[in-house]
Amino acid sequence: MAAQHSQSTIERIGIDESGKGDYFGPLVIAAVFVDVTTQGELKLMEVRDSKKISDGRILELAPDIKTICPHSVIAIGPQKYNELYAKFKNLNRLLAWGHAKALENLLGGGVTCELAISDQFGDERLILNALQENGRKIVLEQRTKAESDLAVAAASIVARAEFLLRLKRLSAEVGATLPKGASPAVELAAKMIIKKHGRERLDSVAKLHFKTTQSILSDGPSADHKTSLHNLSE
Image (cartoon, rainbow, N blue to C red; front, side, top):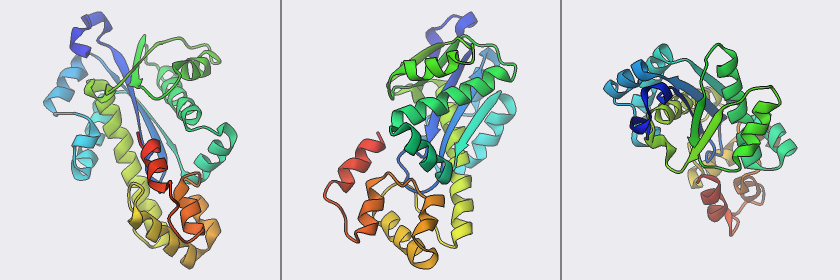
């Protein structure tokens, strides 16, 4: 926990992502730098894991966090996401690439920091190798339930707010509400998009490697549809 660090190591970068388990919309990765001063301010703002906060409150908090904390946001729109997934062929590699990019942008923007904290999602060497290609070194601590750390919680709010705003924008572009998550309502919306705009339009609004795509195109839920999506959203 952050409170156990000495003041010299309280400075840290929290990284988190949003949209990983959502069929529609982008994958967003945010990195937020926190020091002893901003830590106190974030506590006063009652910053906590975005999953425990309403969408409305997330959209209110994010601009305040971005005002007081140096940050970096990497938003990978569905089309770009599908290209990258085809290249990496693995969600953890794609996530590592995004985490490294968010960190790189923050460190390259004048932030000096020796510690980054992220949720446990895969081999941390994937992130560190990507950073070291650019000559940057940092201690990366991956934790389960990392959002309990204030810096990671702040990053989760910034990432989720960006995801929500972009999902709303995509909804306006296709003229239909794109639901969050991966549910029967999501399948229904996807079928409506295909009917209205054609199959190729899915590429610009959805993460095509989800089993949802096969389910929609075969016009019936696949047996492992729910299991697959559950695994993806963990």
